[in-house]
Image (cartoon, rainbow, N blue to C red; front, side, top):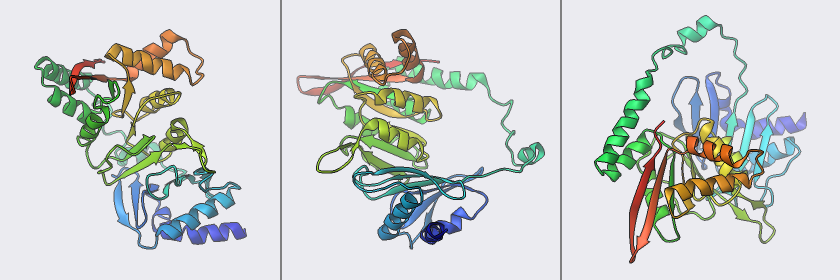
Amino acid sequence: MTANVYLSAYLAPLAPWLSRPDVTDVLVNRPGEVWVETTGGAMCREPADELDETALQRLARQIAAASHQGVNREQPLLSATLPDGARVQIVAPPATRGGLALAVRKHLISDLSVGDLARDGLFDAAGRTDPARDSEADVELEALLAADDLAGFLKAAVRRRKTIVISGGTGSGKTTLLNALVKEIDRSERLVVIEDAPEVRLDHPNSVGLVAVRGELGEARVDADMLLAAALRLRPDRILLGELRGKEAFAFLRAVNSGHPGSLTTVHADSPAGALDQIALLALTSGVDLGWDKVQTYVGKVIDVVVQLDRTAGARRVSEVVFQRR
């Protein structure tokens, strides 16, 4: 009981939103502000002056204590459930670019009838999905490719939420192009970036940067695979993975396929076909119980665009773009 009393006290800065029945998610990217998502509403930023760095750290420690866990530099990832059923994900330094990141997904038990849902507009778009709509988007993209308008194609592909892999060798400009594509993402979207070292620019107001930790000097070892699991609980619209290097490839594919299209990543390969094969090989290192053919097929279904970069005589160039129309 005492632990819950302390927890309620430390949750007080978030209480104005946690107590609202229409709020589904409360997200903290940095001190002094929260991002709030409501049922049927867009995500919006709210000031939270009481939520300074000290208050965030105390809240994290109390959530950890209440769930019989720890959160510190040796244990920077924490998934827990509050007494009211709300699910919490915390990512603390050194696994973040800055301070502590926190996401609370409220435990809502709906008592709405089908009629209530209809009045709320749940079914308004049903039956209106035009199978030609996606194909029209693909036709637009194919036309841009046919016209050799690669810049226009890539801008449109990002806007159309196509999942893009940038392939190339060391020094070919993969991160430079990735940063350019990120600029084309609507600034209303929530981005979670996962990297070994901070290289992707985080200009979007609702973004969180997660960093893999090597596990040196008493700190925890946190790999990209672990960060992907945490990222999914941080309520991203898109996931930006700096580079696919290991078993996290399968987790990335699953994340894209479970509601996060339009995600972006890079991989070391010398051709688009080689990039898809490389992703399949990396996915298999996760231990997934699938054969090569099935994994290869899965990769092909999830990845929409592969951009191949080459460096010749010191010049970086896009040598090939492959668009996999659905």
